[in-house]
Amino acid sequence: MVQINISNVQKFINDKQIIKSANMDIYGGEICALIGPNGVGKTTLLKCLLGLVFPDQGSIKVNGKLLSESSRAEILKQIGTVFSFPSSISSMTISQLFNEHFHYLQLEEPGSYQEILKKLDLEVPLTTKIGKLSLGMKQRLQLAMALSHQPNILILDEPFNGLDVDGINLIKKVLTDLKKKGISILITSHSLSELEDFASSVVFMMNGETYEKKSVQNIIQEYGGGLQEYYQFLKGDNR
Image 1 (tube, rainbow, N blue to C red):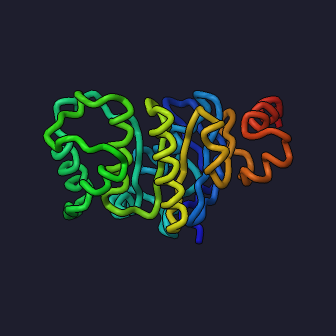
Image 2 (image 1 turned 45 degrees about the vertical axis):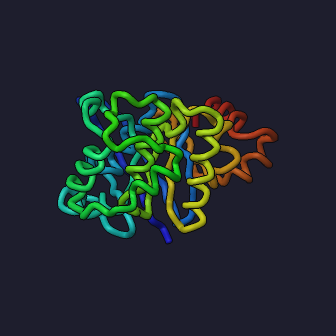
């Protein structure tokens, strides 16, 4: 089942076209990596997916429902996200952050998020302030928040930032287990080597345009190396 459908999306910001043409289908049980240089429109596309901004042309469907200003609140309940924490929340405690998260989504707070924190090896007091956490701990906390309302779609922007090798391997295992349960995962990362052993597919984005989605296995076979070789090949393709 297609859980994310992006069709002919275009987006202008301050009269500059950031996204020229974005097209992508992501299925249940798929880990899709969105890769490309800085400034090509990846973050803007993720913001469109979350209804933080809306396309000027084209459409986005989540679980078959068109994303719009009226449907955004309900659709966001089905999505978990990892983005960098804003500095404004540094004085909040972990428990306050989860309270705010569930209030924002208009959901009742379950009693299970402490189990998620434990699973992600983040066993710290819930009274700990966010500003006291290391970057790696914040990354684990963000993933815990993303999972806490049991979404069937995850959108993760650079989730490996600040993590050591053990942390990266732990996150990979968690995401792989979620994939087996049918969760759709869209992930961006500058560390292509970290994507090769667990991502299912890749969409390359250049100059505001997405290329055709390819399976990671086929890329490794076809380009004789891996995602880095594929990346370099497409950078030389001016279409």
